[in-house]
Length: 194
Picture: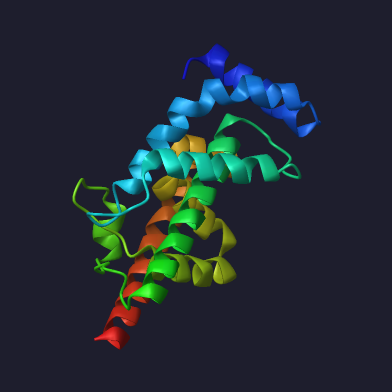
């Protein structure tokens, strides 16, 4: 996104946060394509035959964003971080409902190392990853946020550092430690399932 567009998005977010509903109408066309890319990225991690489509994921996230009137938007990166978190939660909720309907929900587990290396055929057990992220958040909220921003939002090290207000070196360190911790947690849960 061009700098002027990024600035325009930030201004519209701040106006929307201050109660200007017209700002939301101006904002959505500017961010819609990026939200679709974010949704496609998240959907790319889902199993083949997933019935939720990227467009439906964007629409559901949009509805939840409208309800997020209490959010104090900081900037464009913050908006996309929140959007990615909402999309992740929608997918986790969807996966849980499928697991309730059919044990296992048709998902296969993969290691966090594979999951965090976003590959076209990598499929993630979002329920297991969500549980592990919640456990990590209890121990280290910032490391959990780093995973959400890097993995789910697709933000780079610099953007993640900006959103969290820390140095890029801190983000890199947290990213490495979080991956190791989550890998250990996910391997424990897959050992218990076996």
